[in-house]
Image (cartoon, rainbow over all chains, first blue to last red; front, side):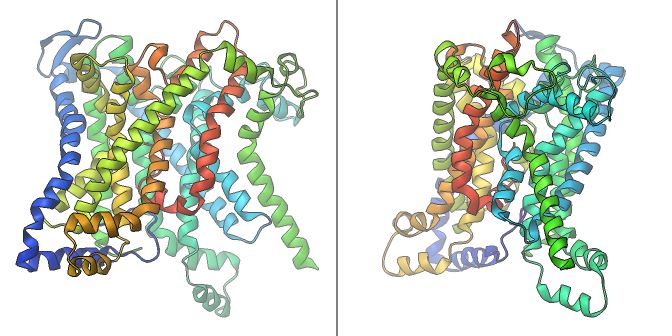
Amino acid sequence: MSSSSLPAAPSHPSRRAATAADRAAVNPLDRGYALLGVLLIAPTVLIFCAVIIYPLVSALYLSLFSIFTPTLAGSFVGLRNYAELAGSPEFWRSLLNNLIWTVLTLTLQVVLGVLAALMLNQAILFRSLARSLILFPYFVSTVVAVLVWRWLFNDLYGILNHTMMWAGILDMPLDWLGAMPNAMVSVVLVGAWKYFPFVVIAVLARLQTIPEQLYEAATIDGAGAWGRFWDVTLPQLRDVLVVVILLRAIWDFKEFDLIYLLTGGGPIIGTQTLPLMVYKEAFGMNEMGRASAVAVAMMLVMLVFMLVYFRVLKARGEEPR
Amino acid sequence: MKRIAGRIAFNLFAWLVVFVTAFPLVWMVITSVKPQFELFRIPPTFWPEQITFEHYARLLWETPFLLYMRNSLILSTATTVVVVAVATLGAHSLVRFRYPGREKLAQLVLFTYLLPSVVLILPLYLMMVWLGVANSLLSLVIAYTTFALPYALWLLRSFMQGIPDDLENAALVDGATRMGAFFDVILPQALPGIISTSLFTFILSWNEYLYALVLVNTDAARPLTTGVMNMLISAFNIEWSLLMAASVMMSIPLIIIFAFLQKFLTRGFGAGGVKG
């Protein structure tokens, strides 16, 4: 198992830990410790089984039933929920919305994140304050972020409409959240604002470990600023970017809070993604069985991302990055 | 000369970007101290013409905000204590012991950390109803372990891998038991890691919304996230300055923690970031 998540500290000591465990295995006296090791991990395993493994299996099971949420009375219907989903335009629309949201917001996050990291890696005045301010959107609760943005987006008194009208970009106040495609654009923008600091942190940490000699060599070879970025910085960032993109893809795909609180999936189902559809089926339509089927279908899509992520980690082995 | 001009221009540009990014949060603070009537000025004023704390006073004394705050504090603290205690033992086991299935277990931890809450939430909801703990802080603590435990375990594992084996080996040579060495050698070494893991876990729990939305529908057990959102939805006319004051208040603990965590940011985000 690769111990590396991102962005790893420059010196990664995982190899040493592995050798210690090896030594323990070689020494017969130490082998008795295996029992103690199992004992220490036991609470974790028990909790995992109770609150993660059991619900996961249970979700699969529930998706084969038709369950009325308020009474929880239900009957077995086999794969009918899935058949209904396959024939439901709403499901396909939600999946499409989910992909649109993920691709757009992820692209913005990565582009903005890399640019901001490059900028914050330069010598600027009060750099650590600037860094903290840039990172803060990632820290605040989604509820706070959404409240603030809904106030900024407010059609009558929102500062955004006023500023844009004052600057001559808009003639009329814009309905940011109540019309399409504005609602999708707004959700994507707020998502990019909230989550790009994650990319900044990962990339910034990597930038600080790129050896200065690489740049000196490139300068001697006559590379300009653009050339240095293209031939030195970007290849060095590749590994960390692959992991960042996969992680963010997984998290953006399953995002619920931000979209639900900004638009509730509206107008109509214009910004409804799969997680929102799960919630709506379960607690709006009171169809808990069908909601589980949507959740399982969503899991299947996410498994693709996850498998790629695990593949990437495995391919890198224990190599510290 | 040209060089200096370039530096100044770059600094101005950089700070403009920082300002634009931070603007929504600046606007939140400004709005929260403006009198209600000033919000509806057209064009809007940037600096408040008069600063008032009436919204904060109203928030504290006339709304259930303090009750939500208390719930959030209890909830996040309880989740953090339980999760970090269990995860510290678990991470120690994953790093320093060898038994069949250890590698698979570590992989499973990462997998569960990437699981979407919406998949787990329906069975968890049924489970809480069945256990008879629905609508309580306890049900939320149980639900929060689903994302907090994998996170804390993963983060602590990475911290503990950084502790040299020789320290523990030396203690064992001196005659300490494995558990003795754990308490006397490993734990003090891992303390910075444990503290920052606790703080990150606390933030995760503090900001959680979906489980609170589904599992709790009474003010007695409602945390800040769903509570404040309820103030928006149930309000007859939306009082934006009150909501902004609430937003500022619920961000204050995060600012304090953020200041402490500066040093560990990369590590904490490294284990999967702050958002579940």
